[in-house]
Image (cartoon, rainbow, N blue to C red; front, top):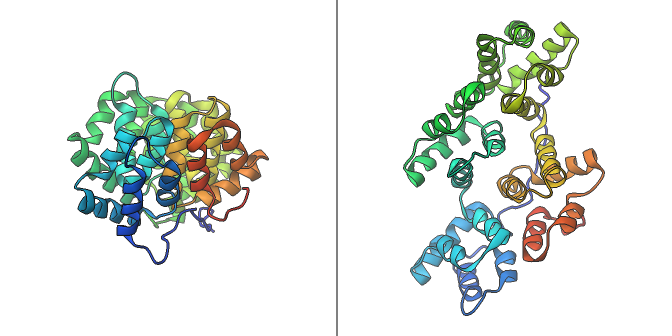
Length: 325
């Protein structure tokens, strides 16, 4: 049985009896005058689905003749602004926004590229690439090519092609694929690295689940342990991210949150990106995995490291049940 088949749940859902005009007026009132009523923004924006927020943006434009996202950018600041504005982007636009900023200016946020490209579906990839081109006038593949290098770049470009098979599995090929991976770990030449990333970037999750089992049978070693032993740098991190996402995406993102909170002194960009992007997909499940894996609730971690309306906004997104999670 494919180990990636499991129930996941987000924390944000469409509310019943929704009225985009009423919400637009509430937000308009909150943004008037000096300062703004951030509590109203949290109450409305964090408790509506992405589709509902898009309708609020349209209604706001009809009422006030301005783009709501631009108004929010003008009136908010700091990490609170990043959370609220991030929620206002449709998911493909948020991914495109994050990728753009990961490669814009000096330096590159390789971890952002890994988090997004290693975890998104084929459909997600196509949508974010379309938005990336429309929003920034740049081709995502070309930007990846110019901002990264080596086998890490090759693997990212492979993922960005959006050619991963979906729902297809061939048990007869699993042992052959496992042998290719084992040889790549043993020999580690450029050609073998290319063959390895082709399998991990192109095969379906169902196929890879079987390949990983065959790899264990063949080598007596877990595929993740073999990758850690045989490769290094961002190429290693990308391959591991794919393996972890095949096995359980929520566990991967729980790990990324824990790393961001504890290894990097609450790395706000990673925390915000993960919580916003996963809010309607599997954030509730990520919360569960976090507590199971690390013994502390995500609620506890956020309250300990964040503050003010930034903390309130993160907690509001994470808690769909009003409980101390």
